[in-house]
Every structure is written in structure tokens, then in C-alpha cells.
Amino acid sequence: MDADQRDLANPFGMDTDCRNCPALAECRERVVHGYGDVGGEFLVLGESPSAGAEATGVPFTGDAAGRRLQSLLGELGLSRSPPDADEPELQNVFCTYLTRCRHPERAATDEEVRACEPFLNAEVRMINPEIILPVGQRALEALAVAYTTRSPESFDVATEHATTIRGRGFELVPAKPFAEQTEAETDALREHLLENVLARDYRQTKGRRER
Image 1 (cartoon, helix red, strand yellow):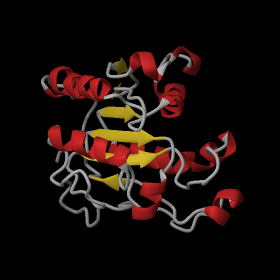
Image 2 (cartoon, rainbow, N blue to C red):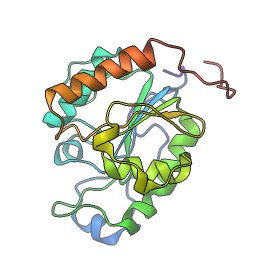
Image 3 (cartoon, rainbow, N blue to C red):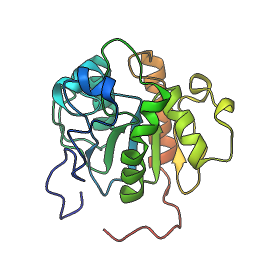
């Protein structure tokens, strides 16, 4: 963790009363911004907060899917907390979403995703991760537009789950939504990260800042 980081929750002080999407602002419980180590070399990107994450205010917590990811982060040495922690002690990883507000009855619209792009772009720019784990098809397609040479339509998260895709300045390791993964798929993701990412020098020669 960067020495000057004071808080894992919303460390960049992003707007917690954002009202750019009126339909979401009227029904949300809270805005769920990114959480984790601002010096992290790993970034986990989901589509939008689950009911559990909205309740805790922390991405990928508060439900079974969150516990599955947090357990994985612990096994990778990226978390010092038990999987059911509402505020996990993360190191070298940052978790965030395409959209920061949850609608209880539907997915975010394309317009709502675009409204949140400045938040995500700022986080990616300031964190400058080496590895991004897009969780779900929508997160994978969103990254494809800006950070790969492939068209979004060429990606399928189910077939590219637990593989590595070269991006512009970092690598992508796609993952199916944790609520939909079988135990075998979670095992495959863990093994890929341990054997094909963490076991080698994944850092790219792009002028990483000194830590």
C-alpha cells in the first residue's frame, strides 16, 4: 500500500452524492466507489454493486459472490482478511465498478455506464495497474473499447475466463461473474493467476512509479 494512503474506501475522494443519473440517485442506498490499495498492480472491475456491496459500501463484499472473490484474493496474497469481512484489508489490489449505483430492478443503461466513465478512467489512470480482472461480459467489453485492439463483439467472457489478453499497457484476465462460477471455474482462475501471472514477472517496462 502507498505510504500516504489514509483510507481504503474511496481513497480518491470521489463524489458520494453524485446525481448524474437521476433514476439511480432516486433508488440507490449509496454510491459505491472503488476500494483498495491505490498503489495496487491488480485491479478488479465489475459491472455494478450487488445488494451486498451496496449495503457494505465496499465492492465485492456482502454476499456469497463477494466472499468467493475475497477468498481468492486471500489465496493470492492480496488480502489479509477473512472472506466475509465487510472492509477487507487489501494489499496490491483495487476493486471497483463500471457503475457506482445499484438499481434494484434492472441493470445499468448504456447512458448510465457512460456517466460513470470519468470515475473509472480517473481510477485506472491514477492506479496504473499491471493486471486488470474484468468480471463479467460488460466489464470485459468496456475495457476492450479503450485498451485493446480487438472489437468488443469479439470477446466472450465464458470462453476467455481464466486466460490472459494483452492490453494497451497492461494485461486482462477475464472472469465470469463470481455468482455464476462453478467451483472448477474458480479453481481455474486461481491456478491461472498463480501459475501464469504471479509466478512470472508480469510487470511491463512502461515506467512504473517507484514504491
